[in-house]
Length: 303
Image 1 (tube, rainbow, N blue to C red):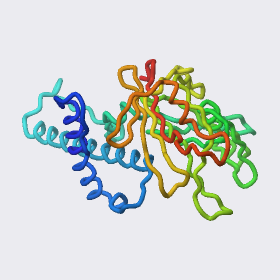
Image 2: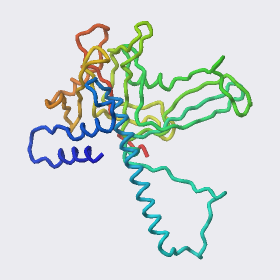
Image 3: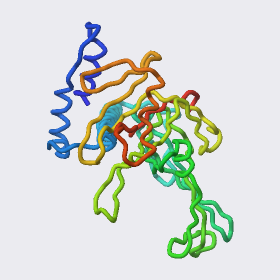
Image 4: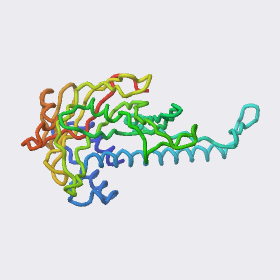
């Protein structure tokens, strides 16, 4: 995390108008910390993003716990002033620990709710889970909106997949769907472009054309976040025809201009050029530059 912070510090404090900064120390540290990144094999950008965010969260949580422990130790060693001289015990003697919320959570974390409705008694069971990004299955000539609809489509649980209903006290047929209970401030969408093909016995890259709009309205949300709007500000693009080789470039919107980053080469592009990275409408195409990870920023309140 120190190496990452140094990198951001170097960029922001740079006096030169133009130039590049090679993230050597950060990459060295990354390789030291995780053996997956030590080889010359091509690594997946989505796996790297997940690793980076989770690792930063771990570091921040450890720091917060250490600070809290120090604070508790110092306060317990000094005489404590308590109103009326009474300490109120927690119910059943249980101390509820509040989860530590880091800046990674504030920026990227959203909440999904998994709703299951028993088809016999109509009781709805909801289970919440947090996410830092959404991984979406893709289809040929589709859009992010249709991929999100499929993500939240209703699935019927029957036969061997029946659901145990607590109210009926037995296995029952049920309907299950996933909705976004709390949308994140920054919505990261990962398009599942690498799929394992049973017949081939290996992974294949799906070059499908998937339209990602500059403005996105989330419809698979629950109240009070109905139709929350997002604006696209960055795209990680995978260049290459297969999963085991290729190159990554990125598009970033900065000060209302779109920039194209390819290693140390940076150029300004027209907003209309973003659509050239949607994918290919035919399976075999000379264009192998496909949008892989999308970053959307919320235009409204997500708290």
